[in-house]
Length: 76
Image (cartoon, rainbow, N blue to C red; front, side):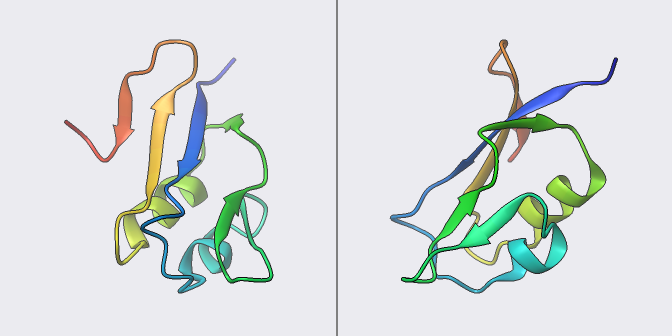
């Protein structure tokens, strides 16, 4: 069984670029105010989620190992 990640978007930082939803459409959605939300708070680790976090122009997305809290992105 693979890793699971806690997915968090800091909506006070999010500018609604939509890059996350374009990179990982199954992982993120934009609300009516164009703020990003993870589709699931805990999701299977995937290249798409990592690419979405890395592509966020304001680094509003954090990924951590579920249950352990160790950062995946941004790295320490």
